[in-house]
Amino acid sequence: MRLILASASPIRATLLRNAGLDPEVRPARIDEAAIRAALEAEGAEPRALADALAEMKARRVSDGAPGMIVLGCDQVLALGGRVFSKPATPGEALSQLRALSGRTHSLLSAVVACRDGAPVWRHVGTARLTMRDLSDSYLKDYVERNWHSIRESVGAYKLEEEGVRLVSRIEGDHFTILGLPLIELLTWLAVRGDIAS
Picture 1 (cartoon, rainbow, N blue to C red):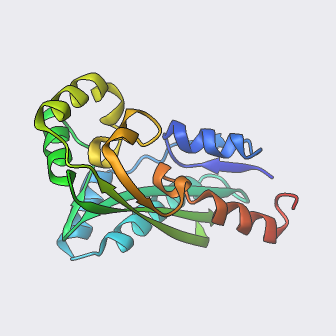
Picture 2: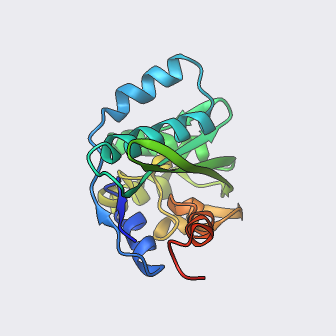
């Protein structure tokens, strides 16, 4: 099976490769910030936001890849009525982490599969994470030590790295937290006969 991952995320590509798949990585070129802003202005819920962005990425790449399965992915962090994006600066990362400290938030990870420019399957996984009450001095040091990595993550942490120290409780699937609902995707591919089961 030939599979394209319409994402620049190294962790998503690694998850697929570790599962025995060999995706071609072809990041989608979309103005994600503008699309996200437009959807939020229309009142899109976090789940719909993640799903719509994943679909747009998959469609964009699928249009130029006839006959192939293209996976578009997106992850959204929701806390109360607020949706977090990847932090643009260390100061924004610190602000996000302060807002998350001592509270429970949701990570919504969407994957949409397209073929010939049309969606053929979709799933949005949800995980809930509770953060420890974190001191401001620790958070400042954390951002300074990890900025090069966390700037690519909503909420300014990576659970697979030092970010695991920020969390006191997790409800949900580990792969969803990493940005790809892998179990559901592999199940769909197996049911279709694209992978052995």
